[in-house]
Image (cartoon, rainbow over the protein chains, first blue to last red):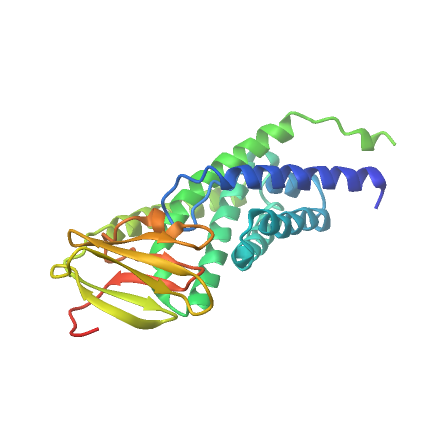
Amino acid sequence: MKAHKLARLALLTALALIIFIIELRIDIIPIPGAKLGLANIITVYAVYKYSTKETAMIVFARVILGAVFGGNISAIMYSMTGAVFCLTGMLLVKRIVPLKFIWLSSIIGAILHNTGQIIVAIIVMRSLAVISVYPFLIITGCIAGAFTGLCAQFLISRKLPEKENKT
Amino acid sequence: MTKGVKLLIGAVLLIFAAAVVLAVIGLKPSESTWVEIVQNNKVIYKLDLSEEKDRTFRIDYPEGGWNEVQIKDGHICIADADCPDHTCIKTGELRSENIPIVCLPHKLVIRFSEEGAGK
């Protein structure tokens, strides 16, 4: 991997991490597990701009570092499963969803993310009690997913300088 | 707009609508006054809220950590905890049959239950 590519991926990871940590301080939604997921703007952006391998690297680095910096290591199981579900879904959906409909794949990613987390919660707690929050997670997930998706869409249509193409 | 995109939009709308319906059903307030506190999938307390006095008690988690449960005016909530996310506190009072108070780090669930005797 070329150095400028590496630097770019590192920059995106750092950006996602900063957004993630700031977001930890502003959680206002009183539903367990519901989050805006603003850091996923970077994920969605990366899914459409970089290869599968590179996107996975950004996301996994973000999740691991986010757990370390956020001081909530025990939650890593939830965020990791969520990330894997979300990423797999978005990478599959990317094949049929064009750039104009990024918000759609972002919503699908959000739904899958929440699904993954609920599955882990059921396994960890060995109880179906948490499933009652699932519909609320889907609703907030759809709204938040549409928002982050639109953000990523604007970001991509801005055509950030791509120096690496010239070399 | 290709067929695939249309199909996906339809699917997402369907899931969203289903979630809204389920959420509305889930918000139904409970008729029971009995609640049970479950830790690690075992019922550790069973209380009748209509008869409980106002009090606060602490539930320790065997692997470290605690939650402080508060009963006030026939309502139950988690007032304080040392878990990292404090989701259980933010959930507030237990209102609906279908939405329990959950503390994932301490594997604690507070929910309405059927009438039952003893603790």
